[in-house]
Amino acid sequence: MKLAKYEWLILLLILASFTLRCHSVFDTRFQPEILTQKYSAYTSGTSNFLSDDELYAFVGWQYVNGVPPDDPFNSAHPPLAKYLIGLSELIFANQALLGFMLSILTLILAYLISRRFTSVFPIALLSPLIISLDKMYIRFSTIAMLDIYPTFFAALALFLLLLSEKKWATPMLYVTIGLAISCKWTAAFLIFLPPVYYFLTGKRFHLKRYPLYLAIAALAYASTYAVTFISGKNLLDLIVLQFQMLTVHRGNRLQMGSPPPLWTLFNFLTGVEGPTIIQTIWVRPISPGPHPTSVSITTSNPETGLSLLDVYNPLTWPISFSASILALYFSAKKDRKNTVIPLSFLILLGALSSGKNLIWYLLPVIPFGFISIVYMINKFYAESSQRIRSKIAIAAYMAALITWSLYIEVPPYVKF
Image 1 (cartoon, rainbow, N blue to C red):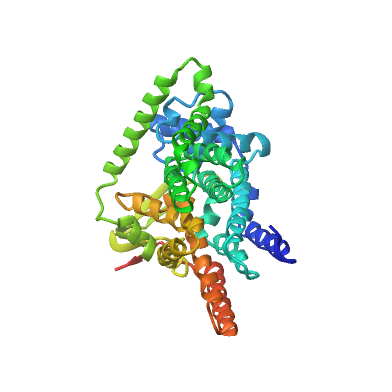
Image 2 (tube, helix red, strand yellow; image 1 turned 90 degrees about the vertical axis):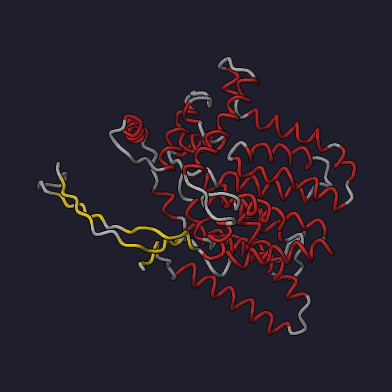
């Protein structure tokens, strides 16, 4: 693939800008003693709060120190992302730095994917730029959460799928799919993309071998439980563990209630999480000194309000939904191989809209929704008879997007 003269330079500038936005990741220090104390206090009931990123940092440390991933630590998710968090702790003494590095690689993959359907410089660069401006992507690139890891593997899998004409790409694709799912089950949407791609592009040979390819993905998934097998467990134990994880997820969804249909889609399109009760809590130290031994706690009267997603962006999130539908339609008519880009976004968005889910579960397909925006921008520009006006419109949109990302803050709630 021959790149335009300055494309890599501009891409490096985008990555540098993204790194500056994520500067807090470099201040993170892994402190196993403190995390162990927090986890012990949480499990003993003396503390009622332990954030997810602290939990995953603690569990990752346990895993890389030999604890097999079939214990209560692993009651909800597969182990690979936690192993990677632990690896980051071992190498960098920083539980989030490896995740940040993979988020950088995801931006590069988004650019390479966009290069396959764009021909006009510098439209392909809009994909990593738009993704790098997304506040949810920035936030999850700087903390030890699981979701940034399947996001990277999903982008890599889609890139490998588009390279399926190369012999080495197909087995690597299914290894990558297995690894993505072993980070978090939300990446299971990847299973449905290859047969659609093979059918639309007439690759019947790959379509016939699809069951064999799934076996490769399953083997890659199972390999992340190597420590479990070494500790004496067998395949049946692994299958039982997967059903236990499924039971946990069903329980979590029931505990969170039954929302109206397409609730996650509504959250994504509007940035509104729903009605909430707002109460302010003031904590004031009583005893003197830098380390007070007692505090007074007072609360305000409860007030009703509307909870909002502070990472919401009206210039990308709802537009990515519409763009994905249009991109699916136009690519199915002309560039069939590109249908997997919007299709991946729509599959996971549809799957997660059937129950009460957290908005960041969509993170593995957010890049594909934004790439669909770029797909439509490319189509708009290529078919425009007024190129200067088109350039002005694209520039105005990007300027508005940059302004929103840098200067506009959505409040976490508004009072009625």
